[in-house]
Length: 290
Image (cartoon, helix red, strand yellow):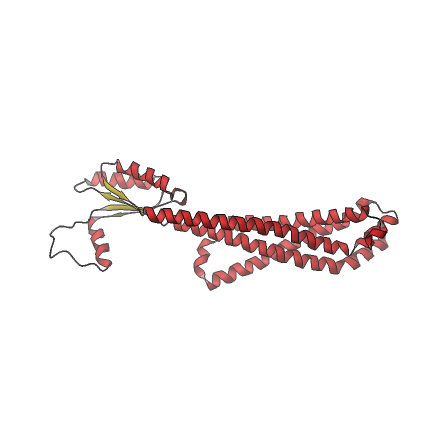
């Protein structure tokens, strides 16, 4: 039996090498798609969280009521960041935008004080913003609540459309990945079909024949996943060096989940395909192997 083990290891090395290379390339492509999907989702969240709501304060409202309004908005779970803009700061912002001073025409600052805040991404939709607007409008210190409704609607439509497209592409690519990895493993096992049958003919049990190949499949799947991850990390670091702005989109938790899925996918498909091929050749007649 030892002689068969040595012969098996020697003859199967080239096919296993090509199998690892092929599976690594396929997993790399799947991982790159996953990275694109993650960045698209993070980019969508960033766009949503840039939606600003302006809450204008009534004239002649006491400082106590204004402070209470600011504290109320700051305490809400939908608030991400907020800024209290006094009448004087509003005038400075108005002038910094290149507008003319109204001092020669008006003796009073017509711009109201306001509380400007950005919302968390899960609230950047028309229904949530309408509820927020209705709630804040009831405050005695509020004269008006504004936000860009058209921008919110268009932004959500665009993100929804892109999400559906990426989901469809991900499903198609995932199916192709499974098929390609399965075919790659089966092709690698095809070169060992006579060895498998020969071992069976001299009395080796199914477990004795399948065990080393199954173990090798587990190892090869893990190695393929690690090689694919190394390639993905190289692309990520290269892209971030070329375009530093996308570094802000990096999500370590999602990347770790993606890499775990890649390794598990490589291991599971390699094992299932290898074991199925071994069983297939064990059940075949010798003449059918030609």
